[in-house]
Length: 218
Image 1 (tube, rainbow, N blue to C red):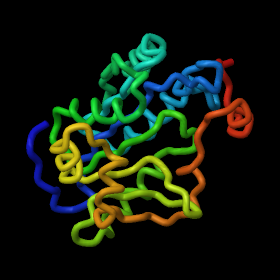
Image 2 (spheres, rainbow, N blue to C red; image 1 turned 90 degrees about the vertical axis):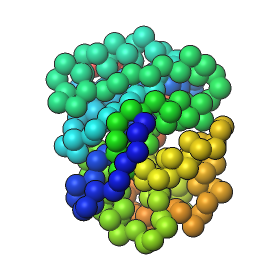
Image 3 (cartoon, one colour; image 1 turned 90 degrees about the horizontal axis):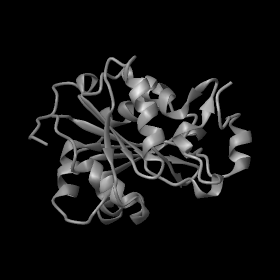
């Protein structure tokens, strides 16, 4: 990853995307959550389509458990994307999400101004939510480097990090985004919102029914 300077205007921000899709999905009978279907498309495809309008300079998906299935889906999706997805495989996904985050941060090669760190099991997160985060970033005060959505006191996802914040995280071996935010609360700007999409994810069969998801497309 090379050095970067901020864009002149936030509307011209160069955005990079890190999507975490290495989980086992153990509470769903080890079904890969990124491959759940909503309205005939996988969650992975829906998110990939949503970010295209922001012209990401680089988009990385971290795979791990179910790597072959998810990477096959990415290969199919990439054939129709203007801004394709790059695959980075976590060979030790059993070490948990922090290992995937760190691997992802270390893998970017492009210059960017902000990094969107997203989860692959949030069926309601789309372009509207990403724009909401970017709008909040434009309002940030001096020293604020991270936009964290907060819904009724709950921390949400995705989270937006400035390039400077990413460099700070990378400068500390073993540290990942959550630990950095906890250690530097003054750098975090809470985005208080009523948008429930930021705190909706899929962990149980009940969640599948609630979000009208399918294990397979029809």
